[in-house]
Structure formats: structure tokens, C-alpha cells
Length: 309
Image 1 (cartoon, helix red, strand yellow):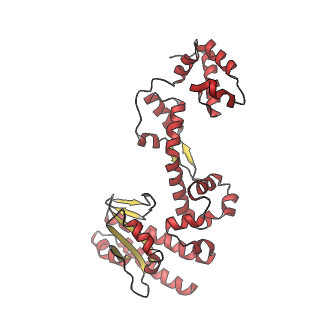
Image 2 (cartoon, one colour; image 1 turned 90 degrees about the horizontal axis):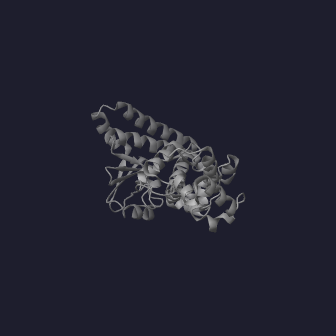
Image 3 (cartoon, helix red, strand yellow; image 1 turned 180 degrees about the vertical axis):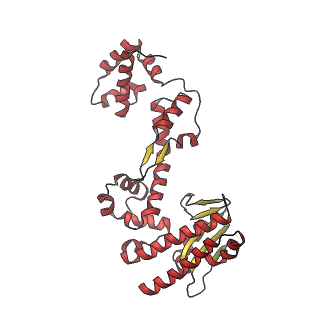
């Protein structure tokens, strides 16, 4: 359908109303919410351009949707940007709307249904990248990360303690700047474990996948859950709660650790493995580079801990 200039200008009015959050398929009841337009003015303009309000809405694409898009197709219309904000890929969304004949209002309804999961995913990434300093209010305000503040409010009621409980982080680590060393080393070790698993199980490793209220570090072959911990003791700080929670979803849970701790640690159906146990397998697949990285990490960790202790 080729539109005249008059019709295009009339449809711009619908754009404006939708931007104001008004359901244009229910103009008579919703128009009072507009700060710019009145019902009579909008109705008159649409009738002059299209003959009726219904014809105008049809030209806008609010009727005759051809089919329902798959959830994955809708998710591809959005991405998490470098500031951890959920953003829309306009090219993909316009392409999808055209393919299925989706109206702007219907697309916004689809978007609303996706936002919670997308924003939770954005917050998950933010926490992994910035914990602990990124959760401090002065950091969020300094960097104007208001959307992150909204995520924390929506999912944890602004409670960092609740977030730490779900992620199995020690709340004391959040409050103690001295402990940032251990957090940094923990992140480095997790990255190293990820490299090792990817080498041994190529294409079969998922990282930081949320399953209900659980976020295991890695899942291998869809069922084998793996967490990377700096030490055995770290793994057992919240063991009874964490392990019980994980074992509701898997019968195969492994903890890979870097430092042996004093004492004996065990938990039913949980396997404890030192990172060095993977060295023979890495040698078999000719990944001596990772063997060197493991040995270097363990050596540096021991020296550094002795220096800060």
C-alpha cells in the first residue's frame, strides 16, 4: 500500500500516541492520557486521511497479523549493551514486524513479556563483571547506571544481601575491600576452569546459565553441573544450602578447586576435584599451554596469599 503524504502525517500522530504509552486501538478510553492530542482532533485527522479510524489502524498494521513469532525470534530483537542496558535492535524488530504483520502495540506487548528475563540476564552479567564494587550505591550513581539500580530494586528489593545469598557470595566480601583480592583471584580461576572445560568438552559447555534460582558456573552436556571455587573451604562456606539447592536440578555436581584446605570436606552426591586432576587429559589433547597456565596460576596464588596473609 502506497501512502500519500497526508496519510503518512496522520500515521505520525499514531506514532506520537504510542510513544506516550496510549493504546491506539482503544482511543476513546485512552486519549485522555495524552498531553498533546484530543480524541476529536485525532479522529478527524484519521478520517480525513483514511476514511475511518479503523482504516487508519489497518494501514498502521494493527490488524491481520499472519502468525505468532517464536520466542527466540523475539529475543533476537533485543541485546544487552556495554552499559548492561536491554536495547532493541530496530532493524531486526522491524524485519520481524513486517514478516508477521505485527502491529507496534502488539510488539510492545511481546516486549513486555520478555523484559523481565532479559533484564535479569543483564543484571547477571553485571554482577559477574563488577562484583563487589559494582553493587555499591556510590559506584552506580557515579556511573549513572540507573537501569542497574532498577534491576536491583525489581529483583532483590535493593538488598545486596539477598543478591549475595542467591549467588552464594559472602556478604562480608561485599563489605570488606581487603577481600577484593580473593574475589579477583576467584574470577581468574573461574575463567581458567572455563578454558580447561572448553578444551576437554568442546561445544558442550554452558557458562553461567540461570536455572530458577541457581546459577552454576558451568553445565557440561546439559546435566553435569560444575562450580569453580578458589578453595575447598570456600565451597563449603554455604554448602548445605547451595548444594541442596543445586541437587534439586542435577544428580551430577562437581566442585573444582585451586587450594587444598585443612580438614576433611564432603557432601552427599558432590564430587570435589582439584584443578590439577585435569592435567593428564590436557596433555592427551596436546594443550600444554593450559597445563602451563594451571601451574602458573597455582604457583602465583600460593605466593600472593603468603604475602597478604
